[in-house]
Image (cartoon, rainbow, N blue to C red):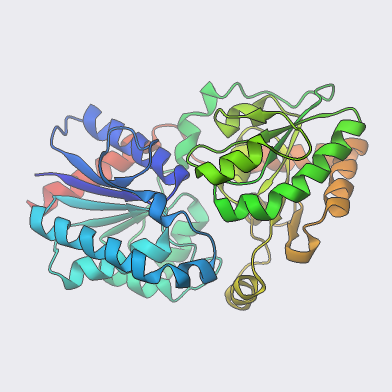
Length: 368
């Protein structure tokens, strides 16, 4: 008896850690093993998810042989050990094919997908695989569950997991006298290489304007990326703790697109969203996407409460323009924070990890 858990990145590690903690609290005392990072507390790690720390379609294509070997090793061990359940967290480009391979190899137990693919945003065809291979999907947002159900995928929304932690985040309204600004170039090496030079220039401009820009060094970032941040050319101070702690003590945030935008929303912090990938990656995404926004807070709001500076718009002058609008316009600030408050009311109630654990245990009981 055991449960197999696989995560693909830092945010998934945190979700897995919360789930595992609640499984133990509920009395499950068998091994919980699989793939994860250093933040996946409670997981018996057979593989590190560092192998999946790649960004964009072109990187995935180059890494196919290595990723296929990793997937084969995982399938072999799952089939050999026959866990009571498989839980796959985020990283759909790896985990959706893994679910298919597990089914084809004969695994007939429950497969739960935490943070399933964003079929509401792009590549809706992946819903067919979720419907065929997954027993249950547990999405992060209510609108995701509605879309999945419409497409025939078994899905239940239990709330956004980080809502459990918000009370410990020192959340408060942003102080207009606060001078700290969080600059967050991302948790992947390619993101750092792409965005750090831009953030360095933004940081210099912020410093000249009386602010205190601080670079965030994300947990789990490869050594090369960490060194780039520590030795940044602008001489900006570096914060190496949890990014949400830096955001909580900042007036606003400039960051790579991703989970950090939702954390900023929960912390009631304004954010400028950045993304810069290869032309090929963006062309494919732009061709297949189904929403005008890339950031979840904007999807929830229906407008760019967080300015999205994508590809050729990811420039120092446009970032500065977005910052100046927020700093100088009290009407705009009020609108931003009213919208963020409305978004937060849609995030569910505490106890999400416990409800996830109950769902997993119920599926295991039904199998027996």
